[in-house]
Length: 378
Image (cartoon, rainbow, N blue to C red; front, side):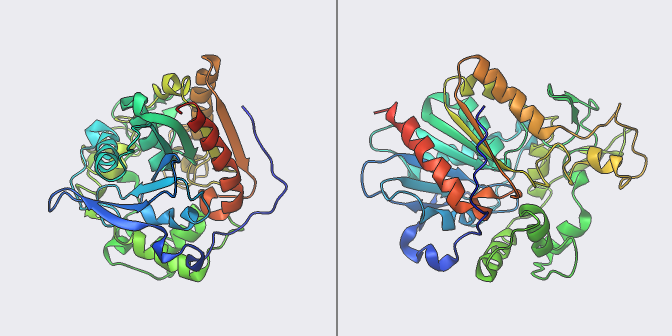
């Protein structure tokens, strides 16, 4: 793998003024109560179609500032997954893993971003959206030209696995899913809390977890993103979902419904992405200070157990910190061994949002990567 280490300094995202209001249009597809919303920017020429897939507790608009920095010849498309942004709050069947979200992307792409040349699409997935991008590429490999993974979910889900092979710590997925989400965060989401009065308020979470410690968003952009986070549907069928008791530490296991459970390793296994990545180029971008997707994630109960933050931790032999980054690297290394092209870029000092924290550097990587991948389809 190639690991660029640019010397340029980290930059914050452009203000909303730099992403002109006309850069992307809102579009909807589907019947009432099952509508999907997307931001679509038309192309000024015959360039690639690039689909941006947002993460958990975010929306398509987290990519909107980026749109103004990408070539005018590109057709840009960013859907709101169900229950986020302006898409309707359709139930989420977690037993399908991320497949409900894959269906959302597929349905929206088919109606709103159909390429008249019928060329495959380039996927850019951030966080949970990185998992959706991997799952979409597994389900529809012939429709995908390249995959960019932006601080992606591990191929083995979030929490509750050990080793680079992603073995379950407990057969019922204990310690993962909706039951591990902080109740105060859920309550403040329900209250539409826009303050920074608590470490668990959406604004505080945005500042401390979405971004690296040295990053700060312009006030207008931070306010917009808080508004977008607060559009998330809350409940058993949505975020975070249902839970069930477990005989294993920490006493809770994932239920069958809701967003957080889709990422439980009980239902989420994307190891087959190695075979897709063997024949489709992959760009993997992550921040060195990511506190969400990390081998030492501050949201992983295994790691929190090592810090003494969760009582009763059974020890690293039973429930270690999940090696999220190492698991992704192992899958992509498997792809390289089969002849795949993988570029790994680590942005020093960045947190969980390299496209916001270091937009210029991200664009400098993304544009040649996609242009090169696109040439193979012409």
